[in-house]
Length: 235
View 1 (cartoon, rainbow, N blue to C red):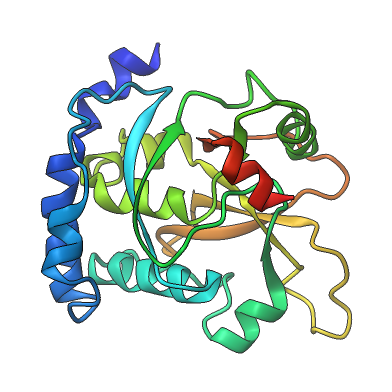
View 2: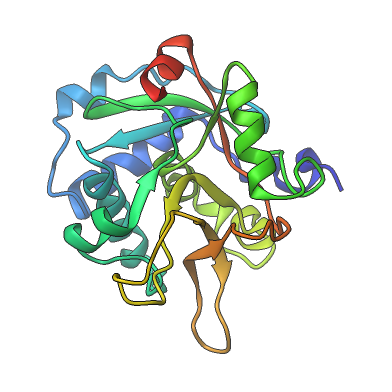
């Protein structure tokens, strides 16, 4: 089944995303973004295409600050399984980093363009994804943009057959150390982050998965269409 027939109706325009974002800004972020900032955003992208979805990305200044802001959004919707992700600034900054092939943003609101159509049919392993990003102009790895995508598109996550639950997408722009062993034994950043189902009653949420040893990809791979400036910032 093609993406268009399965998930196209789960995508919304940027103007609709903005209304969701306004709610989060008041309810979860204590009005972090001013009304002027919200009003200034260009939300004229009305026809989302699955290989080029316009998404409002909210950047809070650091990787942890942005991750934690979206974490509060998800937890407000009872998406509470985050126990394989660090839950404090100190532990997050010691265990998670962004891959060099990611876009860097100034604090504020940004329109980013994402490709939701890539998966295990395109790439065998996460190392294949990393290699493709290094070799392909305009291809960047999604990190917090993926949190924005699923956070703003409620239909992408709310039902069992939604995109995020059925395709369990990776956020390959995040690289993590093994969070299951003491910090003294955690070595390389050879894990990545993925939406996934838990075991038994753990629920659905964000988890880390190893990339060492080339385990096969089991879900979608979220990518970002980068500009030349993004690529320069990533190197």
